[in-house]
Length: 626
Image 1 (cartoon, helix red, strand yellow):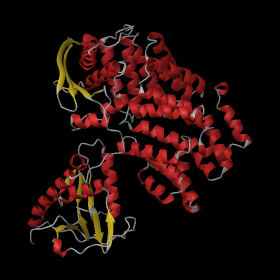
Image 2 (image 1 turned 30 degrees about the vertical axis):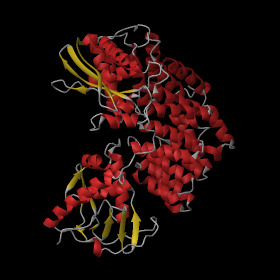
Image 3 (image 1 turned 60 degrees about the vertical axis):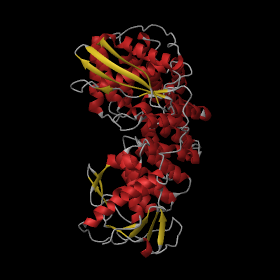
Image 4 (image 1 turned 45 degrees about the horizontal axis):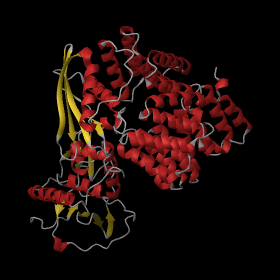
């Protein structure tokens, strides 16, 4: 075969034209999104080879912060376009835990021989076509893959294939610094928790500086273990400077190296190395934070009350280990139980360690909230721990935030919860988690505009945290601001973490917009439980009663005794008032945390005039808490 003279080529029966971003087969022309075309070129440049997830991230989303979930979605989209499927792939094969492989034959075509395609609307349905048999790749394909790599680079430089995870402002804030996770350089590489803890403490220090913008922990830690440039970090977080560094711990001594970098030039504004005993870690944190502020503003950190108590080093290390484990999320009951045992050990070492009590309260709220322990036992223990944290250190916001969650989720008392979260925000107005809790409380009080303001402040402070956009999108959905909800949930999905939950919520937004087919497609990536609930509602709206009933039976099996509130939503949507009321009664008896939203949930609207519903609402009241 002759060396190709055009960047156009064939993949199976599809003609690929990178310059126009289109595919053509049998007279049907489909326009690909730029990032999808870039993905196809990356795979086609290595026909028959496994292309790793990291390689795809580096080539398709270069200098753009996304997660592997973006790769999954782009591959799924490309497969649908090609008429392929994941189970019996004839175009793109999934290689478990390694990446993807282009299974179809790739071959060059001469530009002169290529017929001019007649464009059709991109939405034209594409009928699956039998794929050609798999063949060994001739030597000409090796040369052709090199040409594809050149085409990929040219297209990238031309800007044709660039992509952003979601619309976001890019101009940096005038005075701003992001604290990246410090690197553990200890000999055993077993001090990652200590490095993370130092980074978080520095964020806590710097957020107190007036007029200095410091992104929250989740967004800064988004870049942990990722290969990304300082410039890319700065653009995603809208900062002018980046603080990075490392720790090396040996015995009872620790060496900390820190450097402040100006993002637009890469210039090192300041750097320093600190050799200290471990018990002096807190003074080292103060020194680093003051050096950063002095470099940026020529002044020191504002005075604050001296710490009421400096924790014992062993208790502090244990606390940091638990905090790292807890903040990773996705904990099961065994993980929560281990975290609580370790926190009790830290408290036994240092009974006056307020933050250990505050973290214990948060772990207990999560464990009880996920139904891993009886609500009364878990939430009452959380109340005691949060109260003790506040007694030991009234200036620590975490105890107030945990107590606000107890009032909201267990006491079903939004007014008391608001008092505690207001106290937390008075101590730390930039805490993105407290802002999210404040938004949830405002929602239950019917203060919709206030809730949105809290969520928007959280997304501004934590712009790369998927769950902040999920909270915003969910609230906008409740308020029936469907286009805005759709945009926020799409942003949550682009950011990846927890995207399954955002996907399910987005499916319901599309349902409410009447876009049933797209809503069904959206649920393809949802978990079984959420998928069953969503399918029961969507099929019902489409008049496909038998399919709705089948999905309802699955939802009943998965939710009964665990998530009766969701069952009540689906039953109410389907007009099954008696079954919805019965499910709500069981949810309240089981003290499910979602019951706090009984009056604001839009899917409960059909029940509002039922006297039985009003009696149930009366039970979701502080005066009825046993």
